[in-house]
Length: 324
Image 1 (cartoon, rainbow, N blue to C red):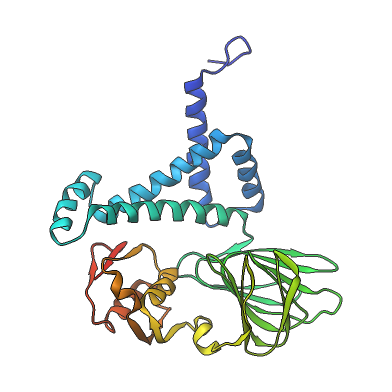
Image 2 (cartoon, rainbow, N blue to C red):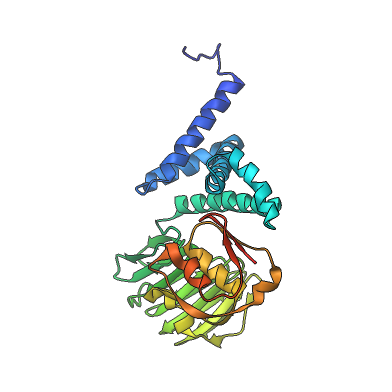
């Protein structure tokens, strides 16, 4: 039936239409060949109304919840029944609920980042991008960038994750990398930028870069070969000499740890695998780890790490792991 000015769509039918649009966008954005035009159209649709944002958030949350239920059992009902058995083994239901929420929120945030990006990698994936000026950018796991190449400036925005930059010199066009808290300016050099949860970390492999605090533009530092600095909203931390073999071993396909706390190892490992790892015993967080993990086999990263541990690791599913 045609809708006219005299017969506008009902509130329920409008909500249904928005839900259908949200589902369609959700399905399309998970594809590998989403164009820039489609990303821009999605951004426009999302901003048209708060109801669009709410509908899309609900789809993302439903997806996360469904995935966890599939991981915990064949159906949601089976998962709930099995939670009693998990409790008998010492695992509490709040742990499972926390995992469900973490998966849902992480996926929603990741999807929105990918929509903005020109180049991005999934969990456990890496990608090398050759820019039009000949510079090379290698994206680490779960990373995303936008690229803007103009006559007088080359700009990369690191939306999330970590990237290695091998920059072709061009005195007429400085190369700028924008992080959340930092701006790194170079002419020609090789360096890393890692956008963490609360800070940006810049490591120089060779060459020279200037790092500026975004919140305090007059505050900057000059880095040379093997220098490293961390930047957060409070300012620039003290420059130090980085152990590039440890910090940047991912470029060679490995993670290397020397006397590193288990909680920090898990934080790094989780960047390369799907799912959630939860500490049942918080005292194990500071357990010290030494070793090397092969990133070319992301499905077995955690099992490889487990071989070096003298603590209990329980795999409830491939998605949910309990330590302790």
